[in-house]
Length: 126
Image (tube, rainbow, N blue to C red; front, side, top):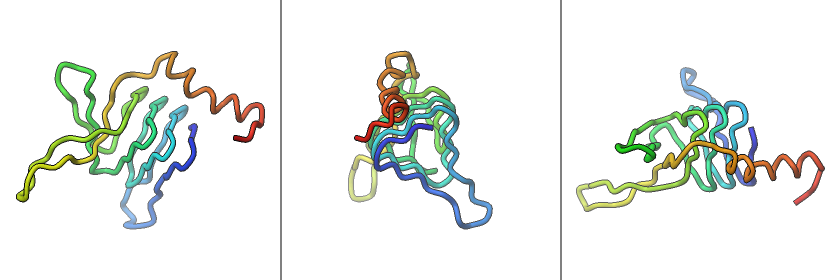
């Protein structure tokens, strides 16, 4: 797992049956992301800066002809950015935060996230 600055990963203290947050191998969590409430981020997924994920956050895959919705799970190799969707409430329509899957991790993504590795390998303080 690779973490950028200011990331918040929430654990679980109670209730006892609650699930822990799971971040799988080689996932990249961008600056100021928050992942809590038992969310699972699968292998090699990339969360762009500012993504907030809870078990109730809609994670919408917008790469196909029709959107596909997830909750509590970021599929392997997904590239995710913050987004919003319109929701109707009794007092009017408002935008609600969500996360958007905009593609799959590829070589150009790996180059962007590899800067973190290079800095750590050469013990460079930023």
